[in-house]
View 1 (cartoon, rainbow, N blue to C red):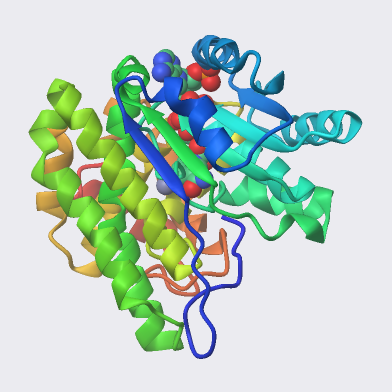
View 2: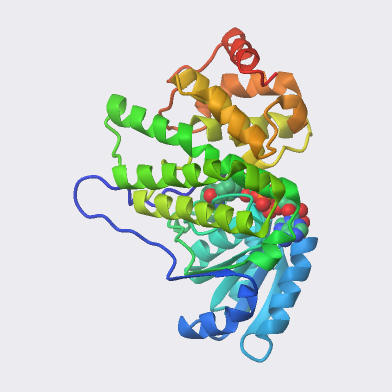
Length: 366
Ligand SMILES: NC(=O)c1ccc[n+]([C@@H]2O[C@H](COP(=O)([O-])OP(=O)(O)OC[C@H]3O[C@@H](n4cnc5c(N)ncnc54)[C@H](OP(=O)(O)O)[C@@H]3O)[C@@H](O)[C@H]2O)c1
Ligand SMILES: [Zn+2]
């Protein structure tokens, strides 16, 4: 995420969170009313992904016809290039606000472009794959790149002004996206333990409230693990609510600390090593799930119970099931501690290759 320097500590605290969260079947049709209530008028850019979410964005644009003037930009890679396309289009058309429609990638592009432009934005999540739906957080590598290429103005990413989560649309998303969202929620168990550790060992500011809220999101998901697997309508609701809750915990902390620890650093490291080899990464939450099993082992938490809950939800618990090469798992474990300046169970020097392989084998990940 782009840390917004609001972490609770001594002195003033500021919490930003969405003003409206509209949630349920047919929520998309409420968009014109939501925008009008928020005085979001004039010109907008709708940002979507390139395939399925493109047609969902088109459906939204037809709903907005006559209410808001809309340009549609396809964020085909979820990259900095996409952020720049949105920013340039907004500059040339004097755009008033943005609407991100899609999974994690188009929403991250929307957040960064809105931060650069200094405009408000709305998220329309089309899947339950990640906890960025309602939060001011952005993929760590992308936010780093944005800081480098778009300048300091990019630092203050805010939470969306509104979230419009249409469960009819989310229900149609591929099953793997639900599993990914479940994995991203289970990750809170190790993320919060890492945060406690950094608080105790490095005197890092800590919010008990944000930590409890994050753990509650993980608990809600694990309490309903078998329903997630079956893909029932009710399970979509549970998952989306828990993901929104995790995003709100991030807003309360003013940092992604309650949601992202060593298991996320492992996932980012895996992205890096896969990209160097020209291999496509596994979904974010699936990688985090594998990381959570292994980091829980290192933390002395009940990793077997975590693995069991992931299995119950149908989430891959081995590299083979996730389609990840075992040597990449080991490599990622050895570099994960260097991903960001965030103290975790990996410590300052991380794992040796031998220790990394032992860990992956002991937990059955490889
Ligand atoms: N901001 C944060 O805090 C945060 C948290 C976690 C993850 N992330 C980031 O989010 C990204 C991963 O998110 P993601 O897994 O959702 O990736 P994604 O690439 O946005 O979406 C994955 C796939 O799902 C498709 N899809 C989405 N909704 C659909 C629907 N209703 N029906 C059918 N297909 C649908 C997408 O279609 P399209 O091809 O049309 O896009 C895409 O092909 C990563 O970059 C990760 O780092 C950010
Ligand atoms: Zn995550």
